Structure formats: C-alpha cells, structure tokens
Amino acid sequence: MARLRAERVAEQMKKELADLLRTDVKDPRVGFATLTRVEVAGDLQHVKAYVSVLGDEEAKNHTLSALTRMAGYLRGELARRLHLRLTPELVFRLDESGEYSARIESVLRELRKESQGEA
Image: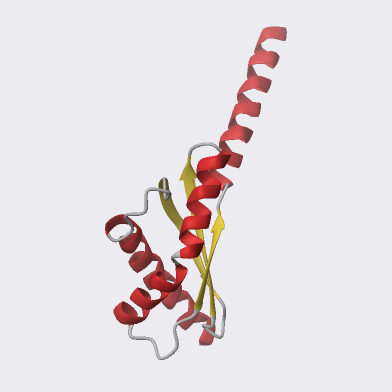
C-alpha cells in the first residue's frame, strides 16, 4: 500500500515539477530541459527528478547546477501545491537514456548498412 502511495505521489510530483519548470523557472542557465521521470522513496522522504537536457555537456552541467541551486524553492512550491505533511528532499539527476537510445539506434543502422553492403 505504501508503494502505491509513493507511485501516486511521484506521478503528481512529476506533473507539478514539469509545470514549475515550464512556467516558473526563468533562470537563463536552465537550458531546454525536460522532466523525464520522478522516483519517490517508499517513505516519501527523498525524490530523484530526472531531467533530459538538449545541448552539449556544458549546457547539461549548467542546467543541472542551476536546478540543484533552486531545489529549495521548487521544494517549497511542491509543498504548497501538493499539501504534503512533509515535503521530500529534492535531488536532480541527468537522464541520458534518450542519448543512449539514439546511440544504439545509430549503431544498429550502421550494422544494417554493412550487412546489406556485403550481400
């Protein structure tokens, strides 16, 4: 039952955080960032928010550091919006699964080209 609640809280946090990133975050260091997933610990005390950032490594690092700096503000806004008794600690992580998928797709495409060239 606790896991079900954690999943519901994670989904609601994802919606609210995505809205906050879209509407409230005006920091120029935050590049084109997309919230990809949110993981909430079973005790609802810790949250990992995964963001995907479009750009080079420098843009990703700037965005991640800016989000980390404003985690307190975002945590306060989440507390106000979600009406939780205790608002979990918020940690941002870089989600590179999209880039990883693109790299695998590229390798597979190259392998297909090579195999068709040999045939």
